[in-house]
Length: 364
Ligand code: UDP
Image (cartoon, rainbow, N blue to C red; front, side, top):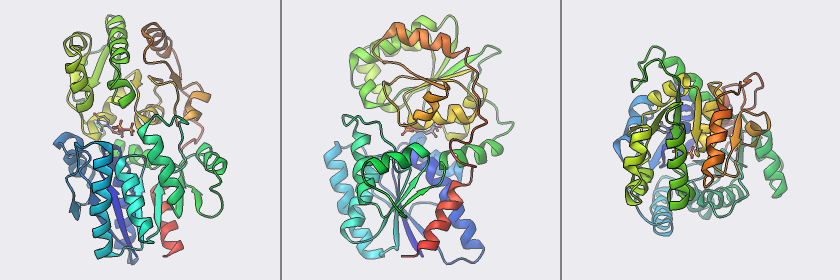
């Protein structure tokens, strides 16, 4: 079986790392399976892309498209065009796409038009907010996929609401749990990427367009960080989009006085911080879950989330990102939350193997 994987953005590298590992394990035990990787270049910097391939042992991409830094339409269109010609040449049995980026949707559309079946990992997630570019990518991808690997019960229910049912929906658990379990074991004893002394610290990440591209929200977030900085050390790896927006709106220096700002981190450094912090403050989808995997409370600077089960159990608190006072209150009360990680909300850490075995059992 020939699988062609399309990735391009940071979270997809984290997810693909464990699936590629499972493919390689089947291959070395004599199963006829082969993976080719197309990297669209949606994220291309060393610390947003290369570091993940190096640290996580992801096989080098067979094709690098270099399509980052374009508008949504231009990026998606060029990706479809270039992925289409790769698919015409290589004719894989399956195209594997991850999550909700432009690379996900482009890979899915290019494949389905050539009648090559698409398998979507992290299917069925919904924020029900169509203003998010990610929501459009998810909906389109789910509706053209032949196999939908849903990480949670709520993802399966969301697909049902949209009429996507039957054998093509498979509840697997979440490959991000597989990744954090595997790589946390590999990074035991690794020093933290920053000296935090003995004080408790919060790990902060912000990168969603709704927050970075809206000056009022960004200013409220910075003001909230200033308000809690004397109570809590803040460690903030900055996404390039966030750094750019802070610079444009004259907020970077203020934030630098309130928080320890870092360049984007590799995955191993990131999970070390998640393991050692006392609280996570984020608008990232993946980081909300990783907070839970490491037993840490989370404050999410969004009014909705795709990972509703964490809100239901009290591990994650949503807060409007334009409301400085509520952010401060949520951070103060978040520090008191004890997270119960006993329930297997995201599977048993073997989602990737289950996905590969399912692809093999379905054949073409
Ligand atoms: N991540 C990382 N370094 C960072 C910030 C995030 O390795 O500086 C990892 C994080 O641990 C998670 C993934 O990137 O595995 C989440 O990606 P991101 O927040 O960019 O996207 P989202 O999950 O919101 O789609």
